[in-house]
Image 1 (tube, rainbow, N blue to C red):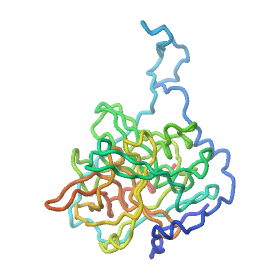
Image 2 (tube, one colour):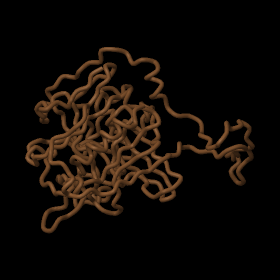
Image 3 (cartoon, rainbow, N blue to C red):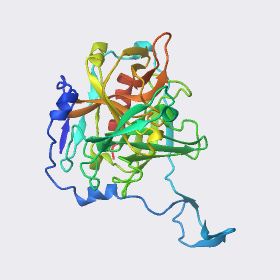
Image 4 (tube, helix red, strand yellow):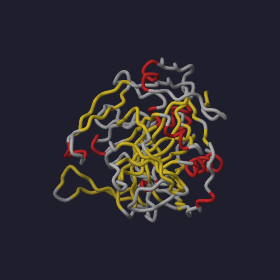
Amino acid sequence: METTGRTETLPPALGLDDLAAAAPIPATESMPADVAELLEPHSGVYVLSDDKPSLDAGSAHVRAAADVWHVDAVHGELRTTIPGLEQTELPLETAESVRAEDAGTDSHRPGWLEQQFLPRLAPFQLSPRETGSPGSRLFFEPRAAAEAERLAYPWCCVGRVVTSSSLGTWTGSGVLVGPNLLLTAGHVAPFGGSNWSMEFIPALRQGDPNPRPFGSAFVSQYRGYNRPSDVFGYDYAICRLYRPLGQALGWMGVQSWGDEDEYERRSYTSSGYPATFGGRPAVQFAIGIRDLDNDSPGKELETVEYTTGGWSGGPLWFFAGQSPMVVGVLSGAETDGFDPRRDVYAGYTAMIDLVRFGRDNWRP
């Protein structure tokens, strides 16, 4: 197994030409059977009950729908999701408490996964009606080298997040940043909602014969920041997964810098699951940060606008040598004064602190 990425000095960032020229890193071992079990798809239903549920159930035809049956759980409540247990909304720190320093965590690629720096890409054009922008836009969808194969590392670490609670149901994006840790936007989490669940589906590809090649995992608890109906620089949450998918798929590292020039001198990749893609991944390359705004305890990392709804929580990231490193997650888009409308990613040391908390306190 290989864990890389957090040294005192990061390796040089790879540009688009570097990614195109970089040869894949082959897998060196087979995935152990107990690890492969983590990726098996869910089946059946879940029962919420204080005691071991009885398997006895009553059934009856649904009136006016002869081919549909209604099944009653005799003991316990039938569910199609695993409910979450704990929400923690963090209080805002003062500006003086935010550390202007370089900080980060490691990435990790298991030895049984091949690493690809640039996957096979398929163009995907959306109309103005679909994007809400004045003109049509061209996006790219990462694909495996062959349709029967799965996405390689680190592309398999990004997935769709489906959130459900008393507040409603919505979707976003997220990325694995630890063995059982998911990083997403704070507004993707159901802060204040009851009877909630969050499901992370890595490398989801709706419409494929095997749309969930790596299964999925539900969130047991999360902590982060919440400022409803707003774009902000600390819009992130760290989530603990019931299934430690990162043990099988690896994870990306996270990075922040005290010097803003460090953000602006690199180009980045953005990955996510826009709703207009119908449950398939999208990616944009060679993205530059146009402006940074302080938003204690985070920073707003502003880029050209190109994302659409559902991309929220998707990572803005780059390759530091061989190591994929996340610098922010998508919060949304905004217009400041006379500036053009821009996408805003939330980043900085408060994001690193969340990931470190998960690494230290939520070990699988």
